[in-house]
Image 1 (cartoon, one colour):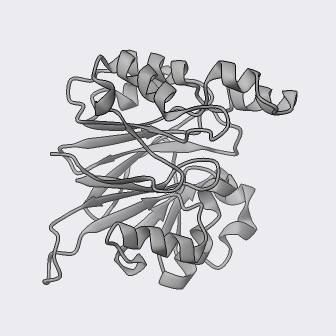
Image 2 (cartoon, rainbow, N blue to C red):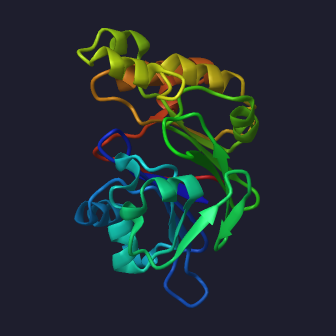
Image 3 (cartoon, rainbow, N blue to C red):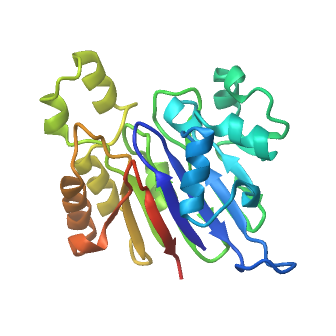
Length: 264
């Protein structure tokens, strides 16, 4: 199983997860699932091409929640390439126009796993200011990739779900001091830093320190704020919690995301 990011941040998010034998011969088609798509159609195609993937090769799209940086490109991509979409009832009902015209929509239970091709996907609920937000763990039956962004705080269920993963993509949205000293309006500071907003570096590090990391092969800091964080601060926090070298921690950027990473 391998994974890559098309881009991560408040201007657009998309994560690609793939499993299967590479090649064009019969029986070698990969399962390739896109988690969210917050980019325009042309931009998405360019970002996929950078990873060596065409939209026609996608098996479907799973959606975490209805905020524009996560769903802005979902409908156009799904309609143009006839892709199925999986999302919660609350996400669909909160923005019905945003998902209009998609021929194949599946509503998921936030507590029940489902499969797309060879990939098993386990959704789990998170505290965020959206209708019915979830995050996902992806598995090929042996290895597990856990993703946690767009949550204001942790829960026991979140930490139980992410414990023992082979790879983690973990939100480090902001540095608490930088946010409080920023030019954001007070209400926005409260929203971003609140229990239904986004994780700061130290909160993410605290979550990481409470997980079983014995199988961890990859650790990526994601959804960094341009104004209220730096990659250096995020990496320092996560590496301290994981007790690893700073160079071992990756960062998902807004422009480039990150290249393919293999879970062995």
